Picture 1 (cartoon, one colour):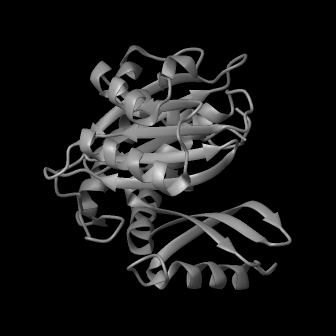
Picture 2 (cartoon, rainbow, N blue to C red):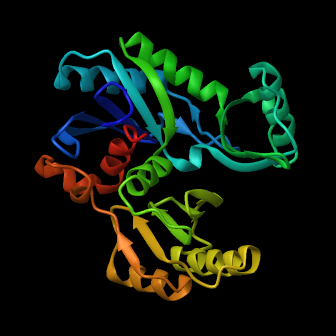
Length: 299
């Protein structure tokens, strides 16, 4: 495990906590345990913006209490949240100030043009993808500060220091990319859940497109895949992909065939067994999430 983070990772969703403990193996990480805990249905409620609101603090606190009773003594954790709880933007700027505070102001000002949210209400993190004389390209993640701060407060009260907050999907891709051969060609990544899905396009190591969409009764997943394929062909002028990686816990043959046909690419389904040396039997139920947990540690 290249990046130095505590061995405990929590994947938090609207109605569940998944605690995962990892250790270093000879070549790949080992999953020592993976335990899921249910949360009350009213723990989080949709804010209508990006990140849902933590409406029932006591429910999250109780979930953490039960979790710690069953998982032993530990005090630091990385926290992964659904992709749909974030806005993921690729920004191209003419320049970026060297001073952190000034750079943050420039990024937030740029977000005003793309988000229907006051940037002052967001927690913003960004990384430089590449920097040239002509400008700077950034990957920017943003989420509602109120929700993140409240979640951190509840974790702190439970004796847990949150050292990292990131999306699940990007960490699945981290786990994939570090193990694949370098390429300059276009690759597609899809992360499918019951309520949302993420689409990402990478040209070599550089992201060209990132988007997380909620699913609803008006549009099926198959319809969204067709619309995404059409949009990418028209916008990025990519006739096909070298490969397509698809993650999710309910990936069937029909979905794989639909993706292969729409995106003109061979499809590789992501399974956690390909990323770890060992895992407990229950890991099979959380392929995508556990793969993301291994991605936390990739450099």
